[in-house]
Amino acid sequence: MAASIPEEVRRIFTQAPFITNLGLELSALGQGECTTILPLRPRHLQQDGYVHAGVHAAMADHTAGGAAATLIKKGQIVLTMEFKINLLRAAKGERLICRAKVLKPGSRFIVVESEVFCEQAGEEQLVSKATATIAVVAAKPVDRHQKEGDDT
Amino acid sequence: MAASIPEEVRRIFTQAPFITNLGLELSALGQGECTTILPLRPRHLQQDGYVHAGVHAAMADHTAGGAAATLIKKGQIVLTMEFKINLLRAAKGERLICRAKVLKPGSRFIVVESEVFCEQAGEEQLVSKATATIAVVAAKPVDRHQKEGDDT
Amino acid sequence: MAASIPEEVRRIFTQAPFITNLGLELSALGQGECTTILPLRPRHLQQDGYVHAGVHAAMADHTAGGAAATLIKKGQIVLTMEFKINLLRAAKGERLICRAKVLKPGSRFIVVESEVFCEQAGEEQLVSKATATIAVVAAKPVDRHQKEGDDT
Amino acid sequence: MAASIPEEVRRIFTQAPFITNLGLELSALGQGECTTILPLRPRHLQQDGYVHAGVHAAMADHTAGGAAATLIKKGQIVLTMEFKINLLRAAKGERLICRAKVLKPGSRFIVVESEVFCEQAGEEQLVSKATATIAVVAAKPVDRHQKEGDDT
Image (cartoon, rainbow over all chains, first blue to last red; front, side, top):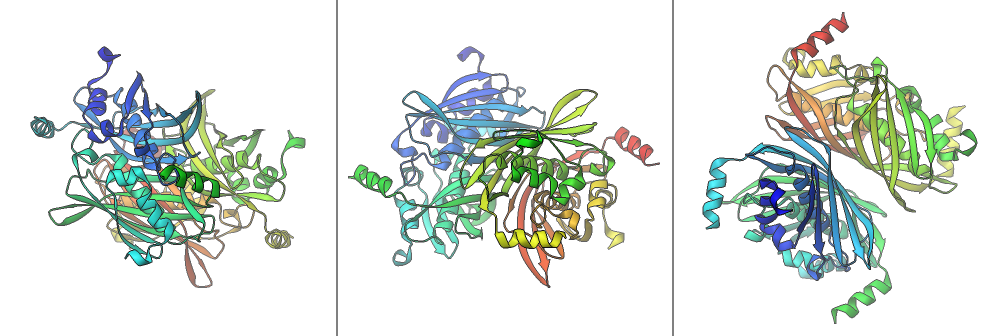
C-alpha cells in the first residue's frame, strides 16, 4: 500500500504524536475511504472497563481526516471543523476497526462518516458512529518549516 | 475539595486509565459543574503541532461526565450517549482548561455543555465547545465486582 | 399498507398539525424503517429558491420518529431528544424523499439515521443526512385525555 | 431598527417563503447577534400538543443565519452547513423567542449558538439549544438575477 499513500494521509498517520501514542494504525485506503485499526490496551479504557468515548472520538475523527485527505490537492491539509458521535454500545474486545467514507466531497470542506466496530472473538459489532466536517486549507509554508525545524 | 467529591466523580477521574494516562486533572466541582485542567505535552498534539481534536473531545466529554455525575444518586453511574464538538481555533499553549455545566438535568439523561480554553502566556482563549447527552444508569453489581476483582 | 401501520406511527403522521400542514406523506414502513415524501411547494423554500434547512430538518426528524415508532410497545410514544443534520447540497426539485433507518434500537432510546434525497427530472440526489436520538417514553394518560378534549 | 438592518439579514427574513409562512419575526439585531419571535399557532404543534422539533430547528437555524449575516460583507450570503439541536423541554406556550449569538466569526464559515425559549404566562424557559456552522459564500449574480426574475 505504501507506494500509493497520498502525502497528507501519510503525514497525519506518522507525524501526529497523539495518534502514534494512541496506537492507531492505518489499515486500508481508497478514494474517499480510510480504514484504521486500534489494538485495545488497558490504557484505552474508562472506569468500567469499556473503551473511553474519547478513544472512539479520536479514532473516528482521525480516520475521517484520512478519508478526506485522499481527495485533496498537493499543498493542502485537512483540519476538523466539527464532529458528532453517537456511542451505540459499550465496547470491550481485542481491537477497534474504523471505516470512514466521504459522504460529500468538496474543495473547501468535506463531510465524512466514520463507523467504529469492536472485534471480539472474531465477531465485529458497530459500537459508535460519527459524522465530521473537515476543512480543506492551504498548508502554511512557515508552519511547515518551523515544524520541520522542531522535529530535528 | 477532597471531602466533598461525590463517589462517581472521584471514580471517573481516578479509575479511568485513558484519562489518567492523558493527564487530565479534576480542578473544581459545583452542583452540575466541573472544571478540569490538562497540562499540554507533545503527546497531545497532531501533525501540525496543535492539540489533536481527539484530545479536545476526550476532555470535553469526560468533564461533561463529571458535571453530570454531581447530580446523580448513589448506585448510579454516567455513560456518554452522544456528543458534538466544534473546533473553533487551533490550540497551542501551556494547558487546556475545560469548564462543563449542566444545561438540562434529568433522572434518565443529562445534557451538558463543555467549553475548552487554551492558556498561553497567561491568556485564555476558547478553542472548542461541545454539547453532550449523558445517560444516567444503575451500576451493575456484577460489573463492579468483576472490575474490583480485576483491580486486585 | 394501512392495516399494518402501528398506532404511534399513524398518530404522528395524522395528528401532528405541523407535519400535515407541511405536506409530509408517509410512503413506506418496515421494522425500524420509514420512508416519507414531501412534494415541494414554494412555501418550503428559503431566500435563494432552495429548500429551507428547517424543512430538511423537520422531515429528517419526523421520519426518524416514524422509524423509531415501528419498534416501540403499545402505550409508548416517541420524543426527539436531539439530532444533528448536515446539509450536503442545495435542494431544488419536484419532491424530497426521506429514508430513515434505526441504527441502534433500545428500550429507553433509539438512534436513527435519516437520509434526504431530492428528486428532479427523475433523478435522486442525497441532499442532507441526519442522526437523531429518540426517547421512548410512556404516554401520559392525562395528557392524551386533555389532548382529545382539546380536539373536540 | 429598520435603517440599520444589513441587506442579507433583511433578505433572509423577508424573501424566504418557509420563514414568512412559519410566522417568524425578526425582533432585534446586534453585531453577531439576532433575536426572533414566533407567536405559537396550532400549526406549529406535533401530535401531543407541543411545538414540533422541526419548528425549534427551523427557528434556531434561521436565527443563527441572521446572527451570522450581521458579520458578512456586501455580495456575500449565508448558507447553513450543519447544525445540532438538543430538545431540552417540551414547549407549550404563547410564543417562542430565539436568541442567536456568534461563537466564532470567520471569513469562510461562522459558528453560531441559538437558544430557544418558550414564553408562557410571562415566564420564559429554555426549551432547546442549537449549534450551527454557517458558510459564507459569494452570491451568484445569475442566481440572484433569475430569482429577481421569478419574483416579478
